[in-house]
Image (tube, rainbow, N blue to C red; front, side, top):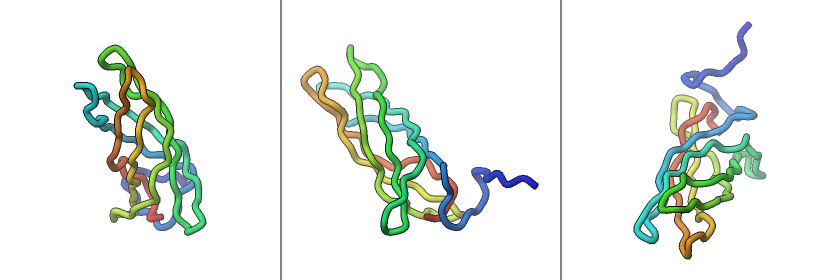
Amino acid sequence: MNNKIGKDDFVQGFVPNHTHGSVDYTSVADGHVHQCLDVTHPPTRTNDGSHVHYTEGYVVFEDGHTHYYKAYSGPAIPVGNGMHVHYYDFYTTENDSHRHRVKGVDQPAPGTE
């Protein structure tokens, strides 16, 4: 029997060990942006029965430098069809006398909570 969950499977409840990906751009600062390509860590359960994801990494090298980030997502947001997403909003480290804001919604993953 195959117990694997596919990306198109309707899944009620919490799915352990899933991750989310995202592709976004930072805010404009010092006349440029950076692309932010990210995959989260597996979920951390919260006291209210939801979960969040920790993430850290570097934005893509641009304008002679890069920036580092560490952040947690918001709680799970059900989007239908047994999937959920997370909102994120964080700032990068300051390099070259500026920093960037990154905000958006990650890619859907299985589970309704």
